[in-house]
Image 1 (cartoon, rainbow, N blue to C red):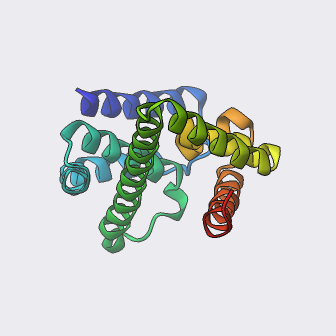
Image 2: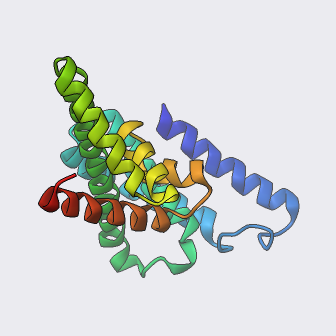
Length: 190
């Protein structure tokens, strides 16, 4: 179903380009629609299978494959030659899947740590919450917000970036700062 929707979207984009009378208004290269449709037809099943081996979920693999082709669409000007396009697609797919797996792991760890704190008996739970509050108070305001959204709310880096109106790289930098502070606190104590 999703495959047909995406293929239909490419046809609609091509029709719109013809209607507008040119491709200069679009961010992608003039050759984007025909080349991408050929890539899509040729490599979709291989990219889906590749993603499924990583993610072990058919729906997630299909979504990942569509993300790969959307990235190819936006980078059509810099796509490698025909002989190198398959490895390029697989590299993009691999990186995307690894990021998805990391995000799952972070969400799982965050939820497990929250469940642990929530199930501790009265006084221990209060002490854990106080330690967490004191730790967060040590952080600069922006890093505190990033830590809260990432570890407590379980947001992905791109979601945190969108929420705070900063770049994803800024979120990564703040998370690095939070982790360094966590290591410092672990060695010195709260």
